[in-house]
Image (cartoon, rainbow, N blue to C red; front, side):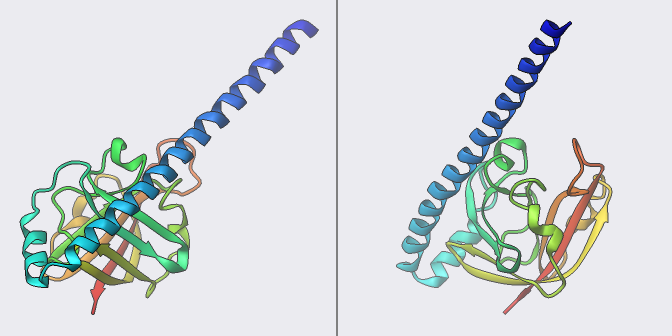
Length: 197
């Protein structure tokens, strides 16, 4: 019996070490991607700054539809320490390394509702601390767009009405809920923000 216990203990230790190594690899991959993508975004912004503003905005509008994985910009929420590159798409290949712009929603600076998704246990972990009136900024090659949080809510995953397109300029953040849930979370946490000048 002691031999079996010893083997079982070693298997548990090895499993834990392997899980820790996988987690470390994923965190390193995210950090490397975010750093490299930040450099690319800075190059795009620098290039856009040498073009007339009218041309930049026209190119921004003409960019629709975007290609999967294409860079959109950086979302920042200073009070809760969110600073993340946003790519086009909301599947696991995007959400494993960045926040994702939900296809079919507006782009920052254009009329409509900009939908952004990210995992609750990575980039949107600190959304649990967000409050009404918190400021958000979305930096793209076309400019910096400022938003303020108006409300939050918890909805069913099937409730896509939170992404409805309105005449104003809105930003909707989507992540899984509850934040501490183990496994596939049953709800979605939604942050509604409106563009400010």
